[in-house]
Image 1 (cartoon, rainbow over the protein chains, first blue to last red):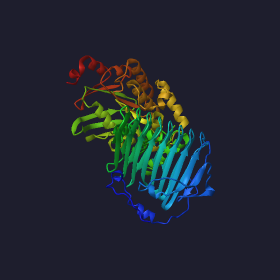
Image 2 (tube, helix red, strand yellow):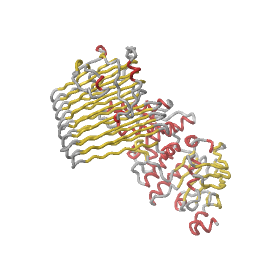
Image 3 (cartoon, chains in turn blue, yellow):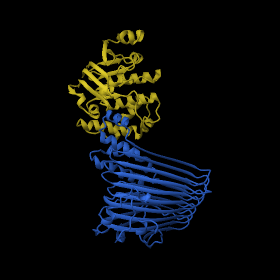
Image 4 (cartoon, each protein chain N blue to C red):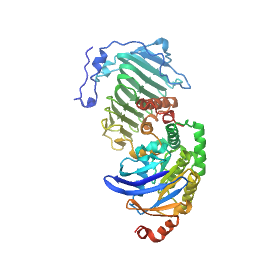
Amino acid sequence: MVLDLPSNRDESWRWSDLSALAGIAAREPAGAAPERLPWIDCALEGPRLLFVDGALVAERSRLGPVGIGDVSLDAEDHALGRLAGRRGWTLKLGSGHAPSGLIQIVHATTGAADHLAARIELDVDAQASVVETFIGDGWANRLTGITLFRGARLMLARRIVTASGFVSLLDRAMIGEGASLVSTTLAAGGADSRLDGRLILAGEGAYAEAGGALLARGRQRHDANLVVRHEQPSGTSRQVWRSVADDRAICSVAARVEVARGAQKTDGEQSLKGLLLSRTAQVNAKPELEIFADDVKCAHGATVGELDRDALFYMASRGVPRAWAQALLTRAFVADSVDRIGEEAVREAFGSDAEHWMAAKEPFVPSEVEGRL
Amino acid sequence: MLKIENLHATVAGKAILKGLSLEVNAGEIHAIMGPNGAGKSTLGYVLGGREGYEVTGGSVAFDGKDLLDMAADERAAAGLFLGFQYPVEIPGVSNVQFLRTALNAQRRARGEAEMSAGDFLRLARAQGDSLGVSMDMMKRNVNVGFSGGEKKRNEMVQMGIIAPRLAVLDETDSGLDIDALRVVAEGINRIMRAPDKAVLLITHYQRLLDLVVPDFVHVLADGRIVRSGGPELAHELEREGYVGVAA
C-alpha cells in the first residue's frame, strides 16, 4: 500500500511524526490477541466487542445493540480518515433508548496496521456510554462518526495503552439541540498518537466536552488537533487537556473554538496545561479562538511548567522519596482531565492506567502512592 | 543527638551561615532567636536538605551520622522533622494520602513493616482530634484553602503522625492567634517532650517560649551563635531587643 501522508509543512500536522507508519503498514500481523483483555469491571455488564487487527472476534464478543457492517462516512478530506475505510461497527439507538451498562470495545493490534470505521447515531433522548481500549503493537487507525439528535447523550472514553507503534483517531460529531457529548482520551502506553476531532454543536443548547491526558516519555509523541464549532446559540464546550512529557518526548495540543455568527450565549472554555518532567522534553499548546458572534463567553488558558519545587521539598522533608513525590504530583496534575469521567468504574480504570504509566519508570512506587484512601 | 560544628552555608552565592556551632542532646528543647536576616530559616533549610542551600564548610552530625550526606527524604527517615514557616499547598493530593505515603516511605526506609490503611486512619484521627483538625480537613488537599493557623496545626498533626526524634520548627508561632498558639504549643510539648526526643525551636518572638519552655536559648546574629543561656535569656531579649544582647 502506498501511503499518502501529510508533511510537517502542513500547519495542522506540524507537530506530527508519521514517518514510522509506512514501515508498520508493510508488516504482517501476528494475529493472536492476548488471553487477558482489559475489560473494565462494572456493576452493569454491557456489550463487549473485541477487534483483533480491525476484525471482530465474534466468539469473544457480545454485540448487544452494536452492529457490524458498512459504515457510511465521508472523511476524504483527512489524510488518515480516508484510510479508515467503510467497514466497522455501528451503534444506532432509537428515540429514548438507553441500553444498560457500558459498551466496551477492545482493539488489539498485533504488529501491523489496521483500519476501522464506526458510526454512532443516537436518536432523540437516547443515551450510551462507550469505552474503547487500544492495546498491542502496531498502528490502529480509527474513524468515528457521531450524530446526536435532540437531547441525546454520549459518553465516549478512549484509553490508549498500546505498547508500541501508533494510534490515530479521527472523530466527526454533530451534536443536536440540548444533546451532550463528553469525550475523554488517555494516552498512557508506549505508542505515539494522533488525535483529530471536529465537533459541531449544531443545535441550540448543545454541550461538548473533549479532553484528556497525554503522557509521553522516551522519544514518544502525542499530537492532538481539535476543533469545536458552535453553530447555534447557547452551546457550551469544554476542552481540558493535560500533557506530561519526560525524557525527549513531545506532547502537542492544538485546540480551536469556532463561534459562528448568530451563536450567541456561547460558553466555551479551553484549558491546556503541560508538565515537563525533564529539560529535554517538549510540550506544545496552541489554543485558538475564532469568534463571529458578540455575546459569548470564551475562556482559554495555556501553561507549561515543571513540578513545583517547593512541593517536592515539602514532600521530601516528610520522608517521601523524590520518585514517589513526582508520581503523586503528576497524578494530581492529570486528575483535572481524567476525573471528569462520570462513570466511576471507568474513571478508576483511567486513573489506574495513568498511575501504571508513572510507576513504569519507578517500579518500586508502592500502592498507597497510586491508590486513594 | 545533633551536633553542628562551624557550619558555613550560602544561598545564591551569598554567605548566610558563618561558623555556626550548636549541640542538642536528647531530652532537650533549644530555642534559636535572632533578628530578621540572621540566618534562622537558612539553618532550618540547611538541616532539612533543601536544594539551593549550599554548605561550604563545617559539619552536622545526627546521631553520629553525617546529616549533610543524606538526601532530604533520608533525613526524615532518620528521624528529623522540619516544621515549615510557610507550609506548602499541594493541589490534588489529599492530606491522608500524603501522610500515609510519607509515613510508610519512612518505615520502609528503616526496614519496618508498613502501616495498614485502617491503623493509619485511626492514628490520623487521634492526632487530628488533639489538635482540632477534623477528619474532613485531613481528607482535603494538603494545605489548600487552609488558614495560616490551620496550616500550622496541620504541621503539628504531621509531626504527631510521623513521631520524629528531632523536630526543627521554623517560626511555628508566626501567624497564630493566642488560642491557636496554645494548641500548637500543647502539641509540641505532648509530641516532643520526651527523654529520647529533642526540639530546635526557631523563633523571632518570646511568646511561644512561655508555652514551650526551652532548656537553652541561643541568639543567632549574622550567621553565628553569639550568646547562649537559659530561658531567662529570652526575657532579656524581649526587654532589651537584639541590638543590646547580640552586641
